[in-house]
Image (tube, rainbow, N blue to C red; front, side):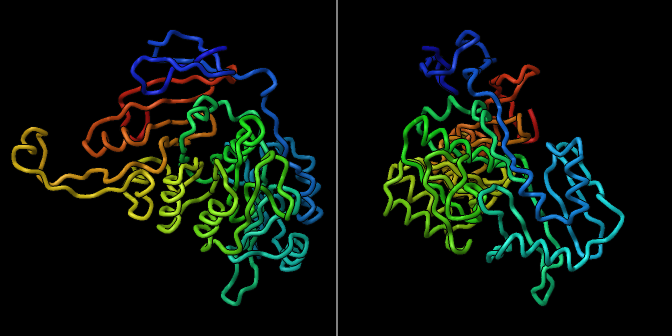
Amino acid sequence: MAGVCVPWGGGACRLISPIRRRFPVSSTVASLSLPDSSAMIVDDNLGAFLEILPKDLRHRLLNDSRRNQLVEVIMDLGRPPEARYLGEPGGQYLRNNEVSMEELEDAQELVGEFGADNRAGIEGTLHRISAIRNRKGFIVGLTCRVGRAVSGHIDMLYDLLHYGKSILFVGRPGVGKTTVLREIARVFSDEFQKRVVIIDTSNEIGGDGDIPHSAIGGSRRMQVPKPSLQHKVMIEAVENHMPQVIIVDEIGTEAEALACRSIAERGVMLIGTAHGEQLQNIIKNPTLSDLIGGIETVTLGDEEARARRSQKSILERKAPPTFYFLIEMRERDYWIAHQTEKSVDMLLRGRNPMVEVRRRDEEYKVVIERWKAYDGQGI
């Protein structure tokens, strides 16, 4: 059995399989790899996605050498359709002719009914179609996003999963948070033999339709009638289905943050994502700060203030964090991992916490670097 050094620990080493340690325990850099069977596999079912597009766009994209990097297609009434690709800052027009209302209506019929959040899907796939409506409620724009089931990405945090602690992911839209949730669900249900329930508000994790996509493995999926009911379905999952792990995407309201705390206090592991790019965004967000323990103003006595060399009124964390780990997904292959409690306390005291930088090297192996000088802007 191979081992990996416990993150942020005191020099101890916890043995975890199938990770293998490449460097001494005292080193600040470690290289992790999974068995060869965990090679990156991407299933995008692009054919089903292209079927909803006009015929000329379908033909153009089928013959596009960059179709594997296609992120989304934008169709706005009265404007040329646009394709956006992974790693490219702007988009590319697919033709000179403008999108017509008839083309939007044809796409809408192929997609089906949009929910209250103006999102729809293609049954049996992970693709997401989002609508823009005018004041009368008619659809005047579509954002057609390619959904990909990626397996083999889990090695970026495979060692952390063995701790059984809750993990929160933050990062800008499109960085791959939902993709990671999908594979975590599969690994926990199929490899760790855990009872996993996914709270799938917009059918983004498990795909559209009543039968969830195979990418989530044996995990069960609970659909949410309206986005505003997500917190109630989270509590329902715990009370009715005895999960060991709950996975929820896009935690964004105070009710959802409180539901997360209630679930964690019942001993259920949580894997979630939240709006924000960095830990500081969560700290400064009064709606979501409860996820990292909440922030309160404390007035110190004169002696304590002198001992700390600080002002008398300071900010402190008021409760244990709901999520033990917080991961900033800066890029798809560049993450910063925090031990939430320690990082929050250090940042509130104006100090730089110890974090782990997790990235892939030129050989696509995961490299972990331990740092102390984290300032929130970069490492």
